[in-house]
Image (cartoon, rainbow over all chains, first blue to last red; front, side, top):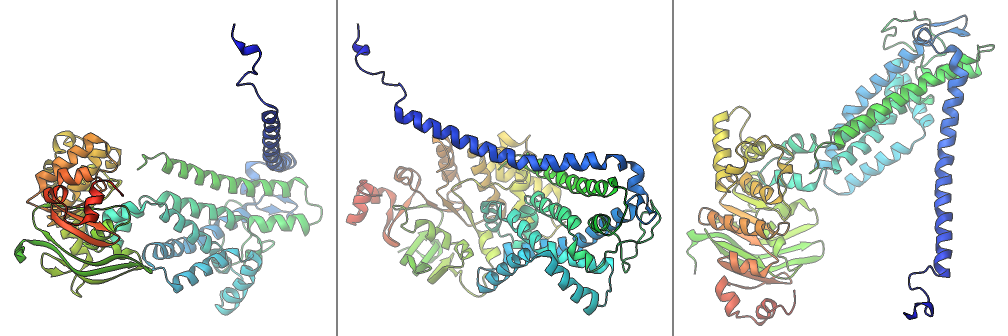
Length: 303
Length: 258
């Protein structure tokens, strides 16, 4: 027979290995626990909100105006107000942001001006929204004499989303391989021809995703619009599609939620929760749209 | 001495720095028209940098500084009247990794024409003819004539590289610069590209950078050996490999370093 019984099995686990395996299990357990810990609050929040909001959730809640001092009725004016604010702010911020990002990424040389601009963009993105709100109050409401209005509030939101749109657009542009650009330059294409023929078509998905994600941010912010154009209550008939003029103040979902929760006594308890669910649903829908867009772009044949 | 009309590229006292690193040192080079010239040397010797001087694609990097002259077909290309777009139309470039644009095969071939002509100046027939002649010249027409609307990035690598060469042809370049055009290809692909180079010689002047000494030996008429940013030796390929005059060349082709 072989001498296998005398010598230890060559592939048997050693004591050191068993210790390493224990640490491996521990590490895995910790990472898993943290993941669960992250998901739990989200599920908790969603579940709690939906359960509390259930009695009020209905189609009429969406399309009716608040009634009896906001203690009953729906949220139509706030919903439309939020949509107005978001659409106008992005209509301003998206073109400026995208074009500026194209300049910075495709044209600007790497010199100190460029670095200062970069620093400004990053800093602007980190400014707290309440500071944007104060600036909007000073600049748009007073200095530009736009008054407390949808316009002032939208411009303030635009200012807040602009740096992030610039950053995400630059990232999308930078993900287009340099070899595509070189291929274009090497047949004598100008930069604009290169951008139009190759860079934009291959980054448009990422650019749009970045913009759409700012929709949810603009929809959720309260401070910037509170100072510049959102009101507690404005009498608007439920279901009207364009109830506000641009130089009027408007209601907005985030603001409405704050009002219901803190300023109005004896509200039916399910109404603030239902408002929160609608706000959350708007944000989730928009994010879902962004994700779908990104998936569609990703599944295109790769280079 | 080469008569001036036969000169495709001439450099005089060409120096180039990346920041403070000098990548080319006083390069004086005369490349003949209508032949294949190979640039060889170990990694970092400046052969790709030199190649990229010939259509000024180097200048995309803000750190690059050059002094000296580069003449293409007798014309100084750093002059004030030189438009980069026109220069690059006459001096095309093929890269290490095939870089077809993420468009159809057809659009890849006509891309240069579209770039240089205003919209509507080209008829469909002209474009079709350009595609057929360019693809025929690189030997892709038979394979791709029915699949011109396919995405170019889905082709095999060898076909992609041929397409990248075909993309230059409608612009009628005088020179084609190739930066290790076969390094991403297998043996058959390499062979096919070399065959293609032979068939394009005479109509175009070809300068190829290669890491592969055997390829330089097979596929070039003249050979330039560079080391540490200097031009060491420039002779007919057969002579350079059989009887190198500089000991550094001899050691390199024997494989002592590199």
